[in-house]
Image (cartoon, rainbow, N blue to C red; front, side, top):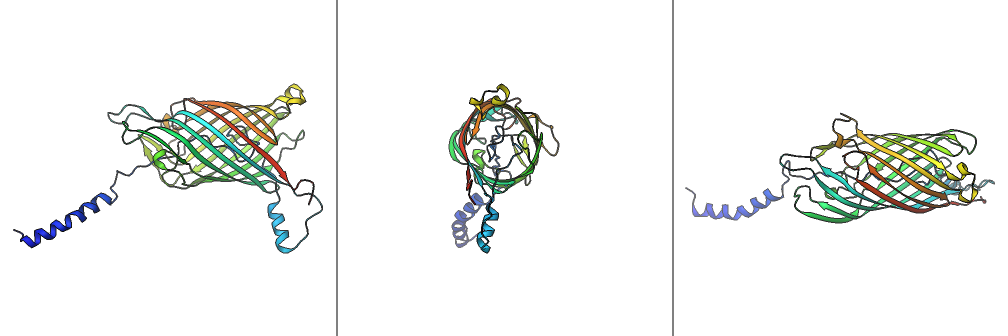
Amino acid sequence: MRSPGECLALARLAPIALLVVVLLPRPGLAFEGFDTQAFKPPTDPDGYVIVEGSRALEGHIIDRLFRFLVGIPPPDEPQPIEVHASAYFNYARNPLTTSERGDRPTREIVEDLSQLDLVVGIGVLPRVQVGVVLPIVLNRDGFDFEDPSSEIREHGIGSLRVDMKVEVVRVREEEDVFGLAVKGFVQTPTGRERDFADNDHRVTGGFVLVPELRPAKFLRVALNIGYEYFDGQIEVGGTRVDDKVLLALGIGLDLAKLTGVTAIEGLEVVAEVTHFTRLCNPYDREEESPVELGGAIRFNRGLFLLVGGSAGLNEAIGAPDGRVFAAVGFTSRLFEGRP
């Protein structure tokens, strides 16, 4: 039997012990979210909607900087620098649902997702561009995954993306029919995983190979084949997220060249299909392999405009019941016509 002094000492330690139990991480209770946003626009105006094209922004920043630092005068020929800036808005309905788990029925975790993507791209070398995309979640309306009876409305910053595209083979107007580019990208954990705007505080990255064909003056077709690295694995509601194989196809019709009407030069109708699946055990579950089909009309003549819509073709993460999107921006050639 303990003495009164020992009991008093234990009583004093009880609050500390309780605090330790509460604060220490407990296995299986940590929430792991992932980025459910499949709409990731390119950082140049020559893609389709989110499918990449093979052209990169032109630039001579590195050459100009080197000449400035070592005191070499600029060359006689112009060294333009292309800069692109745009804002993409997209609204998706039901981009994330959970499958049955135990006695829980299928339910929409993210019912409404509105997002604004601020895009900047700049040419640093004649065939090399770098770009940044800052996603801003305007509204995420749905339910708490761990407590489906609790409604959530959130907003905030999404996962910042940085990319670099190298134009390997250039498509010259009216001459070549084949172009090729390679894009590398990194996505940083700046969003909140509970909002499904972040990959559980993990940095992801990968590459995309972009072959593009122009079989006719008015027609272009691009294929995107890529890989995204994911550190570890996340499982939410029976759906696993890890390394991905990225696949996409874009088709564009130049209306001015198709019809011969010069007044609509720069106007293009595009269609695309986007898809990814797990690198390991691909197509093991439909929920892990979304397919989305969309189309848009776009204008690209310095001023950049785009409006369109898409929908998921299956019940999978990131594939919404419907999506509408629009974009406005501009592309400028700095130092054009002067060294």
